[in-house]
Amino acid sequence: MQRKCSMRYARDFPKMTKFYEKMLDAMPVNTEWIDSWAFFETGLAVHAIPRDHARDSEQASFPETSEKRLGKLIFIVENVEAERTRLEGMAASMLPRQWQEPTRAR
Image 1 (cartoon, rainbow, N blue to C red):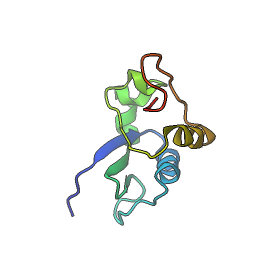
Image 2: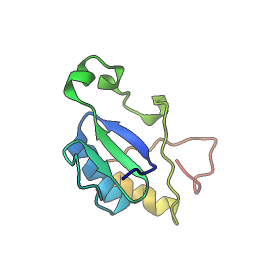
Image 3: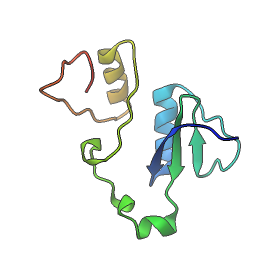
Image 4: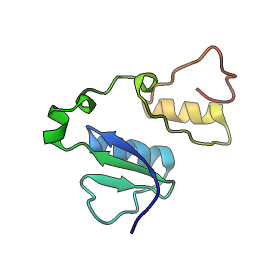
């Protein structure tokens, strides 16, 4: 079955999949390749970087913050402050921006 989605590559596939399970409050729905691919009904997918590719790839050393990455994921939430607090409780780092209205996003 073909599905449209945004995909995140992960060096630590189990850890990133668990993070998105908590963040989205959902489990992956795919039944194939579950050791390297997690697809969520929200349209997000997590894909493990194969070890032999990671060694030779710049993806083997992603920057610490998403500000230095080319891709961004955007989610719509009812209450930005409450969602920020929930994600910080899951050890997600938030990057404050001085130019942006605090109730919109960070």
